[in-house]
Amino acid sequence: MPRGLLALAIGAFGIGTTEFVVMGMLPEIADGLGVSVSAVGLLISAYAVGVVLGAPTLTALGVRFSPRQTLVALMVVFVVGNALSAVAPTYETLAAARVLTALAHGSFFGVGAVAARTLVPPERATQAISLMMVGLTLANVVGVPLGTFVAQQLSWRLVLGAIAVIGLVTIAGLLAWLPAGTGERGDLRAELAAFRRGQVWLVLGLTMVGFAALFSVYSYVSPILTDLAGIPEGWVTPVLALFGVGTTVGTLAGGRLGDRFGWSFVVAGLLTTAALLAAFAVLARSPVAAVVLLVLFGTVAFAMGPVVQNGVIEAARVRGGSLVSAANQAAFNVANAVGAALGALVISLDLGYTAPMWVGAVLALAGSGLALVARRSDRRETARVAADVSAWRTEVAGRLDRAA
Image (tube, rainbow, N blue to C red):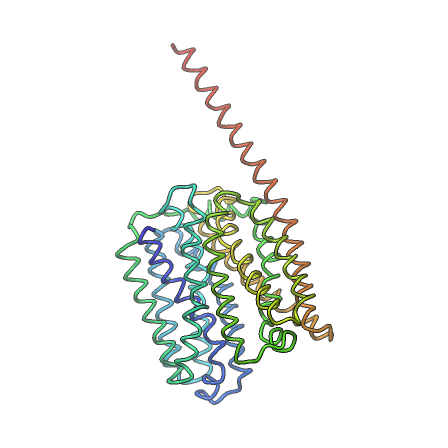
C-alpha cells in the first residue's frame, strides 16, 4: 500500500471518530456544559449541516491548488475545530466549533478519493479509495468505543483534544508520504461543467436513495436490538463493534470487487441489501438471527461505498473531479438525514421497529433501479468514447497514408 494512502486513512479515522464519538459522550458533554442531553444531540445535526455546506464550498475554493495542499489545509481546519471544541466554555461555542470541524469532512473525503486514485494504476482505483475509507470504518470499531470509555472515565474534552492530535499526525503524514505532484490542479469551470452531465446526477441520486436504506435502519439500531431482538443493553456495544468489523471487511472487499465488476456490483449489492432487510424484519425477534443479519447488512452496504465514490469521479469525465467527489460526500449525508427521517416517520405512526427495515428494503430496491440505469448509461458512454477513438485513429492513419 502506498504510504500516501496510509496518511489518508489516518485522516479518515480522525474524521470518523470526531463525527460519531459525540453520540457516545452525550451525557458527559451535557453535564459538563450544564445543558440537556437533547440539546447536545442537536450537535449531531449541526455537524451534518456543516458537512453538506463545507463539501462543495471548500472543495471549490481549493480546486486551484494541488490535492496535497488542499488536504493539508483541510486538516488544519479540522485540527482547529477539534481544539476549539475541546476547550469550548459554552454550549454555543461548542456548536460553532463542531460546525467548523464538519466543514473539512466532506471535502477531505472528496479530494482524498481523487488523490487516492492517482497513487495506484487505473485498474485499482476503487481499491485505493476503499483503503482510505477503511479508516472511517475502523473509527467505529476502535475510535468511538475508546473515546466513549475515556469520556466516561476521564473527560470528553480530552477525547476531542486527542482527535486534534490525530489531525496533526495526518498533516505530518500527508507532507511526508503524499507526493507533492499527486493529482492535478483543477479548473473550477471544468469542475462545474461536470454537473451538466446526467450521469453525475444519476450517481448522486443513487447515493441519496440507495444509502438512505442504511441509515433508515442504523439510526435506530439500539432499540431494534433491545426491544425486538431482546438483547440486553450491555451487549449492544459488542454487537455494534461486530457491525463495525463487518463494515471494515465490506469496505476492503468492495474495493477489490468494485474494480472488477463496477456498477454490476452495486446493482447486486443493493438487491442483496433489500433481501437482508426483508429477512431482518421477519427474523428480528431472534437474537442470533438479528445479530448475523445486522452484521451482513453492514458488510454489504459499506462494500458499495468505494464503488459509488469512484463511479461519480469517472462520471464527471473532467480533469480532477474533486468537486463531484465532494458532492457525493454531501449526498451521503443527505442520505443519512433522509433515511433517519423516514425511519422516524414510520416509527411515529406506531408501525413498530420493523417498519424502518421495510422502508430500507424499498429504498434499496429503488437504488438498485438507479444503479441499473447508471450501468447502462456508463456502458453506452464507454462504447461511444471507444468509437470516437477508433474513428480518430482511422482518420489519422488515412492522413498518414495520403501523406506517404
